Length: 346
Image 1 (cartoon, helix red, strand yellow):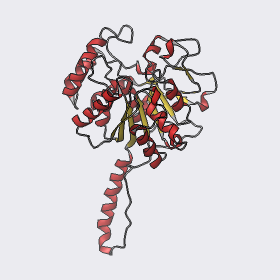
Image 2 (image 1 turned 90 degrees about the vertical axis):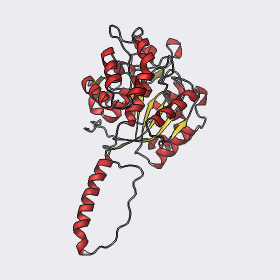
Image 3 (image 1 turned 180 degrees about the vertical axis):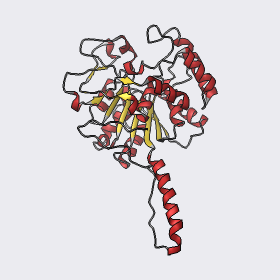
Image 4 (image 1 turned 180 degrees about the horizontal axis):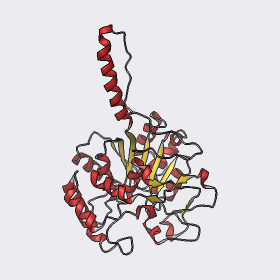
């Protein structure tokens, strides 16, 4: 995995941390005959440490609703791929309302963790609606405590409404500076006065504009995987058949819990002249693990909630120099590498 090219105007260096639970034990003097064994121990120990250092510590904040009739399946696909990604150190899964109610998303996250044999991963319930911004929940408390315990190390992957993370940021001023990066699926790029048709699909930010604005304007390094970018990847009928027939991980669960959504998407595809559904949130996970597949696009802008009944939110470039942007909104993805990775991990 090639490290992401950082902007020249200073950003944190590469992902050089080890697992967060690593502890170093004190040593002691050894007899000379022990040196060869010590050398081998150190050699293999360093090799293992190098492997461990490649892990990316992340909290996944999601409104997962795969398998519920009439609800999108992208969060579920992302969570399954994440659980099958050895380069991730999943510190916890936090849930919020959005794609479904808080009770349903929390239950679904626990269901998937149990089915995958990963019940040891903490799963915490969070916000039940935009009215919970600033109201502490188990999810917001977990996010705040985790990043404060490991400042500058933890990534947060937001693939639902942003209320949990916004509440964590509002809880203490030290939280935002302690977050390594946020990778978030949501938003629509558009200049003022123009609304592309795909703006209607921006529900992650549109469901709670105040929370989205809180996170974006907190000063945290923010990567916005927006709707137009995600629409470059379409789960076509051919890809769907391949996924449900060849998926190496949790194939039966995937087939069972995506079938209805796939059939509905054949008539309601968001992309003209191309049948299928968009696995929106999976692009955010791809960016977290493989930013080299994307073309970074730093911008300055703000959340605009004045259009489309305040349900869709666009973030637009204000025409300021992009060299010191407020957020990164990648504008290209290597689709071939994305799908190769997808079918290896799903």
